[in-house]
Length: 296
Image (cartoon, rainbow, N blue to C red):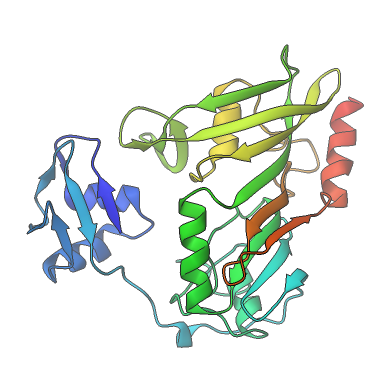
């Protein structure tokens, strides 16, 4: 894994903890074990990055998969073959274990039923959906497929489409939001549009149906940043309905989560190159909450 630095005067351990999902402590251990290079050279934890530095991580920390415990949770499988699964994730399900939540995730449900690629605490997981985002996800059953799918996602070969119900109406039918996303400096659990320590983020959208006070849109991701659609829609003053982090909840439905659904995915099969395309309708709760908002 490589990073090209776009910030100055930040400690490398802090910079990488922001750029990855790993703690500063784990990053520091990798640096101490000479698993992280800057411009091909070994550095210390107090090295301060400069714009243009190329950081190469030779080894990412992986927790042993055998420590995971299976959970008997229903998985809605849309497609399955020897290499991969396409699943329809329900809203409210966390994708993979993390500190404070090591059970009842999608990964815990998968390991009890399928052979998966070996990716530590994230076996089979090549991309994610937010906990409260529903819809289609790809899961790799072996390491060959995992690497192929990960590369296809990185190279934008996998096409991902979302349905989002957002606040307000538009005076145009299509749009593109090109605005970099990084961690919110005031709240590390949130993302924001910022020029500081950020990554390029592009979301394309088009209006599908417009109501008096809200709009149903289709979003296509060109990049895959954390909370990308939610952050971008807030940025243009059309927050996703029922998003309590970046907007506000619908009274009585706050626990359901934002009205964001991964409804279509299209990609070439990693082994056969056959073009596969799948589509699923949003869950009943999505449409119920939208109906409540439309009729307010």
